[in-house]
Length: 120
View 1 (tube, rainbow, N blue to C red):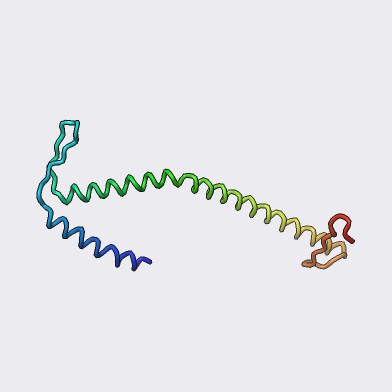
View 2: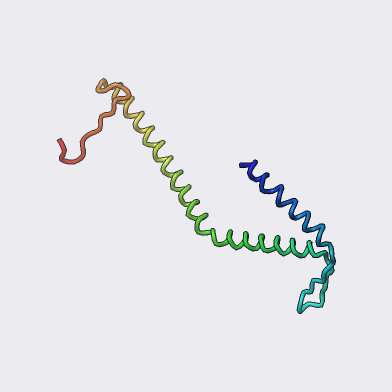
């Protein structure tokens, strides 16, 4: 997977570098209605706008994914509770098997469970 990332990243890096070299002309960036103006290279303005858009999109996506993160957190808590219950039940089963073995009624590892309700 890391190899695929490098295969994609290297050509993209070359394209960005070529774009930066070809677009070194200074452009004026105005912050209307503020009185500020900034002269920066065209490549910096374009790449800065792309980076800003990427970061803004990532933040918005993170905010909208809150529901899924909350569900995953709740699911992890539920799994932990079930694992604790399984551990407790196994411990109780081991204790019951030992008691039965000591009483001579059954050998360890042999589970005898009473039938439910009216079943014979």
